Length: 100
Image 1 (spheres, rainbow, N blue to C red):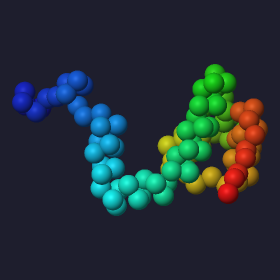
Image 2: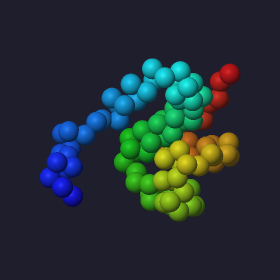
Image 3: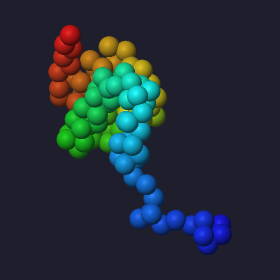
Image 4: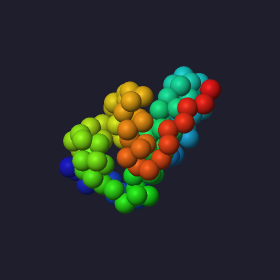
């Protein structure tokens, strides 16, 4: 890589800065808001897993699945069933509540 092409970590744009900029675009904002419930579920489950000092592997074992399944869920690459969410919340010591 050429010297002028190299960037240090300090020079890189943070995702939060990009997100803030992109939220000004109505199409991006709409798409993001459409996915907000999914983001909220994933974020809550990750926080509970970390609070319980569990690795993805620990949680997978408790659920009778494999670590890549937990990674896919946490990355948003997997659309979980209600049954999976109930098992997950129970394994994390929580209670799944759905409100409309």
